[in-house]
Image (cartoon, rainbow, N blue to C red; front, top):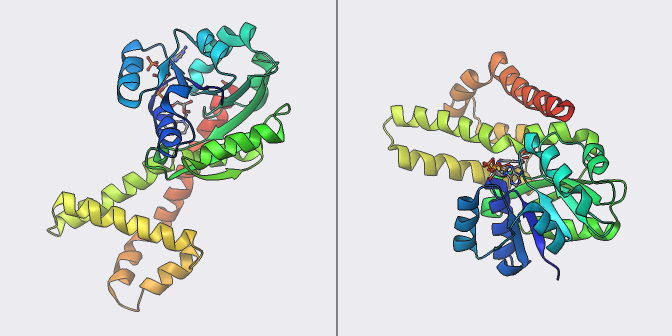
Amino acid sequence: MSAVGFIGAGKMAEAMIGGLIERRYAEADRILVSDVDTVRLADLRRRMGVRVADSNAGLVQDAEFFFLAVKPQQMEGVLDGIAPLVRESHVAVSIAAGKALADIEGRIPRARVMRVMPNIACLAGEGMNVFTCGARATEADAERLRGMLQCCGKVMELPEPLFDAVTALSGSGPAFFAYLLDGLVAGAVREGLSRDDAVVMAAQTMRGTARLLLEGRFTPSDLAAAVTSAKGTTAAGREVLERPETSDLLERTIQAAAQRSRELRRA
Ligand SMILES: NC(=O)c1ccc[n+]([C@@H]2O[C@H](COP(=O)([O-])OP(=O)(O)OC[C@H]3O[C@@H](n4cnc5c(N)ncnc54)[C@H](OP(=O)(O)O)[C@@H]3O)[C@@H](O)[C@H]2O)c1
């Protein structure tokens, strides 16, 4: 199989590369990375065994299927830099928040383009990856991408207009869940638990809850009801948590993140 490239070797690229190697989608030496940060590149090569390209242009010459894994603000410069080298045989997959397919296709007009919103849980093989296909991407391109993303967690294909919501919920979501968990842990520490024990208990509780929902055993409201007995401990906690201002806060959190995704699209 030809090499798979990553332009931008930051946190998300590392998470996805880890999945591809661990699930044996690709040998490490079939993965090619480029980045402006040469220290970072050397570190990735040492730890993961990936190959390092001398430049983004060099990467595009060696890898016909490549991910664009730079920050949204860095994308234009990267696309303009590689555009003269991109041919019809290239498949470019952007993971950048807010960058629309049409923008990317406009800058590298010969490439087949797709877009993915992954999340940081790809590091643990438990990512949520939502992808969408550009006008020139083929069914075979989509299947290849799906196979790669399955190495990093769950995969969904959705239309691009939903990507601001996807970015807000599953792209940014790990930060929101971590924040909520931190608050629950702080409460447990006040009640006497050690912080380390409380983090394990809260995270395992989050994982168990997630599994019950993903396996379809409960809807979220049925699950909450199943744990709540009248005048019990859960009911006492829910009385505080479910005040209208809290549920509004969570909704506004997602709306603010989606709004920022819309702004990045226009930037
Ligand atoms: N982190 C997440 O949880 C997450 C989730 C979903 C989607 N994403 C998306 O994933 C993308 C990457 O995010 P990240 O968190 O991995 O960012 P990151 O850690 O900052 O990685 C981006 C890397 O690209 C490098 N870079 C900058 N300009 C470049 C250029 N011209 N050519 C090649 N490399 C260049 C950066 O170097 P410097 O640091 O020196 O600039 C950095 O090493 C973003 O577009 C983000 O929207 C991230």
